[in-house]
Amino acid sequence: MLEPKLKAPPTIGLFFATGRLPSDKLNQLVCSLPPALHLIGAQVHTLLGTNPEGIICSASIAEGTARAALTLGAFPEAESSSFLLRSRSASSSWSDWRISLEEQGVLQEGWKVIVVMSSGSGSEWLQQLISFLQLAHPSAAIIGGIATGQGLVRAHAHKAEKIGNGVVGLMFRGNVPLTALVCREDTHCRLRQVRAAMEREGMSLLGGTMFSCSARDAEADAHTFALTFAGVPLVGMPAGGEIGPRYQPDATSTQVGGVALQGFTVVYGLFAVPARSEHFALHFQDIDAEFAQRRKRATVKAALAAVAQSQATMLERNEQKGESDVDDDSGWSSSYDDDDDDDDDDDADADADDDADDDADDDA
Image (cartoon, rainbow, N blue to C red; front, top):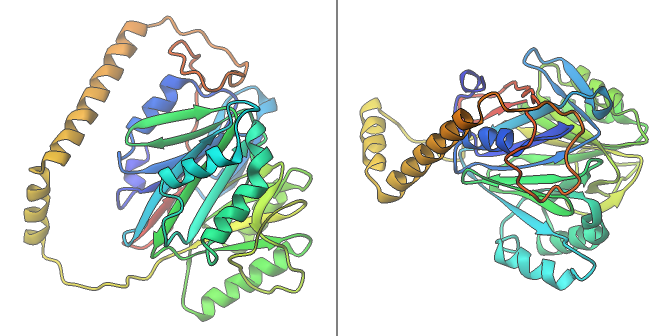
């Protein structure tokens, strides 16, 4: 479904869903994406995003039917990674998280963009976490929010991890032109100022993500974005607290640094189409030769074998499962850490769109 929309293998993904996301459905989605891709997501009470026609759509958990929004992006001259922090019990401490951050490479130099989402008791350490991340990466744009649902997901290398309490994060470094825009009552005016500034610099917007305070009209915030940047993909959610540069009433442009956990704001993460910093000639013969050579590498062979085995296992599981699935609209289970092969078979719609040049793609 998404393949015809993608012009390059995606390297990052953001995923939001209302209602329950069965483990088999999540694994099926993750295994359909490149193993190198890093994805984070959250269960939310309400999600917003553009459909394939570029129209803003919304879905609520109150509707009783699970809905989902997925956005994918490829940045040829950037590196991406992700992290997951569990908050298992009251005995979990900040020192445990700090050790985990170091082990997962979060404290390495050069991260320019960090997207953070928390859920449950993971929000207790959130202010300390984002302040620590900003101290480690002073010029980074850090955005995100507290999810209103009951769980989070992080996926990489065809493996999905689900947690009920904790934090997930997505990181970028290299050529990733993202900045944050924080608004309150002046949303339309500030978005128009950003559009004018980008036009003056000959830039265009690739896509956006949005975290809007749950006390605001998040759908209005999404429509304001769509009116300002017609046809540009957007995905987002209402949040129980928004992460972004501290709101400044006099600011007239996007911001980086100065992260804060704040309220009654809408935080837009704005991805511009990256300009290539390296230029070189390519010939079809060179591409074919390089592709053939890479396929011979031991690591690539192992990855292809793992993908084939994963697909075979999933096919066998589906055949054994047969018609035994029972529909259940009860929402994600409260013990969100468990992987249950008997999860119900709710449908999750993936809305995607793209607006990019040959160097970058983003589908929402």
